[in-house]
Image (cartoon, rainbow, N blue to C red):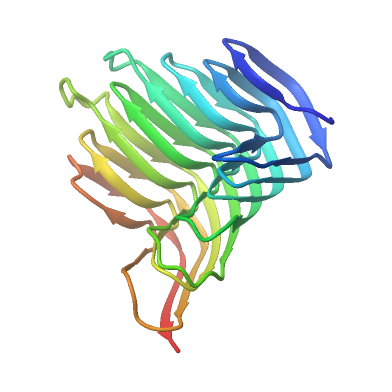
Length: 274
């Protein structure tokens, strides 16, 4: 395709396939993706992006640069194989925002997806790179990430010291629930398979599942995920900033509660200074 959809609301995309797409956006906080710049309340099923490149000095994503929903939408069986370059990049969504309806059955789900991406920063600004989602914000509901297979390679060779985050599934997360914290709520990662290869030269929070959880006032649940290969390699020109590396999570701040069960994997972590 020569053009992508700029803004779409409350639509269903089924059985759509893109091959060898090239999308580039420039300008202040530009956004680029193969399917849509901005989408609200859409569902996706059996949508694929193959052998494609996306570049923007703001948000870059395989399918949708900015995704919003306030209902229990399901995204399933999507496939992405792409090179992404931007400040915030995600294999499926660059930025995703889910505002639930305070009902414990309200769940946004990303299921049975297959993603293989190479991610690079666009410039010297802060960089967030996630295999599925670059940055996720959620409130008053649950987010379920299940049965996804993700391979992501991230190369960050910059010298500027910024707050960067890299995650096999999601780079950076902020979730909250202003009501009760019942068992039905939560950020849930179940039975995913992750390969993450990160090489960096500056401050970073990086993890095989999530790089940085900045605020979580509803539970995080993590069960039966396979970190098939997680390699985190940071080499600094000189000691600077902060480095947070973990097989599952780089850093979690102010979490309500977390349940981690049955994680298996192969994790290698290296930090050096020249």
